[in-house]
Image 1 (cartoon, one colour):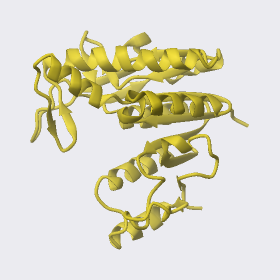
Image 2 (cartoon, rainbow, N blue to C red):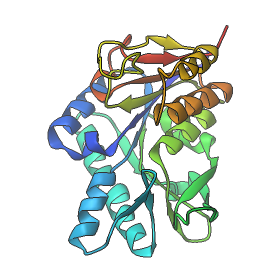
Image 3 (cartoon, rainbow, N blue to C red):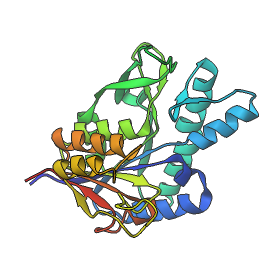
Image 4 (cartoon, rainbow, N blue to C red):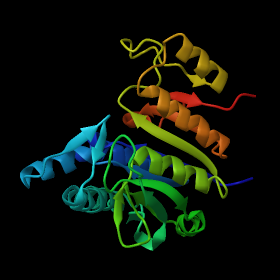
Length: 260
């Protein structure tokens, strides 16, 4: 019987505002057993960039990361946001360690190749050191992972937090019974996007395809769910999509499950 591990991914909006950050830290601290927290921080990066006179450019919701923007996101994600979370967890007797992918070579990426768009210093994850993370976790340390990786040649790379959470969960699934939780601004995957109470409690891949065909699941939720099924195929036990405020509630949100 493998030990349980929960990987939680939260967006920047939750960790950048004091009230929601404190609530998140309380809820995260209440989750039993081994756990990992992966966070964003995009709004703080945009705000600091503007204060420094650096224009933020986005394409399809993804940040174009030139050399100056890379400095900003490294400061904000790996510094300000990450260390605020770590300090808050220490105050709750959670022995947390903030990590970028460069720390202990825990996540190595390659710079995204230029196709239709040049995203600049953006990384696509190539490997996660599950053994090293597993050693930390077994020592009672909770990794708090910033959305930054490195290429092994001295360059930091801005890397999507959903991707870091997914790749970390897949890698750790070799060692633990992993539940991956994506925190979302809604209570889960909704049957009616205008009705917050229309949460679909569980979805298998055939059901997902049917819901897409019917137009019930659309837009940005499609890649989120595709990534969820990829994680299941790679050995993750379960993926949950829920509100950040509901992460310590065992039956909240939508559970993404393998077909039996």
